[in-house]
Length: 205
Image (cartoon, rainbow, N blue to C red; front, side):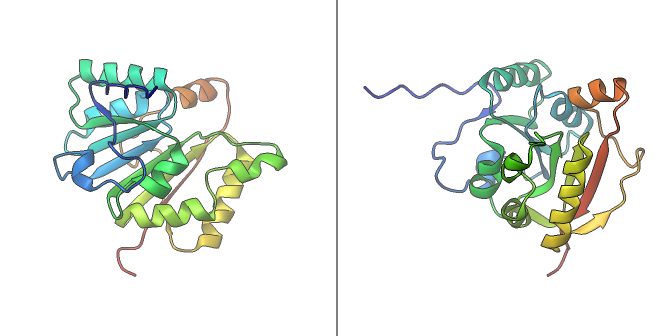
């Protein structure tokens, strides 16, 4: 017996076909700059960004259905028409689903660091991911990364240096409005150091 497709939650992006790249108009009807929160957790970061920047569109990507439903409810209650939620694995979203040259900023905040050496291959920041990221970013688009795991931070810097296509950017604390995630608030309260980096795709080849 075939299963009936799950109905989309209000504010959820539910692609008709997960085996082709989307076109930009399938994400949002407006042509506003698109920002992606990859692995949005409880959605607090994406929700605050969407409130602060109504002239931008935000796509929150999360694998867990319960979290997707929670973020959709909060976005609907806040009437944030510039925020949609996609239930999908992060790597697949970047490598196979998002349109080419469509994303102005991609935020990867506190991803699983996979600390054991035998699991390092599961880390998201690797050459294949960075190549896909280069494809989906617009010229001048940015990648912003935060982690409390120092070794993963050093790993990410090495991978970016090996890739060699992105330009490093300064990221002082007061550079622009950038809310803390639930993880960041928790870990800063515990006295942990938060490491961050920000890079940009060149505006010309």
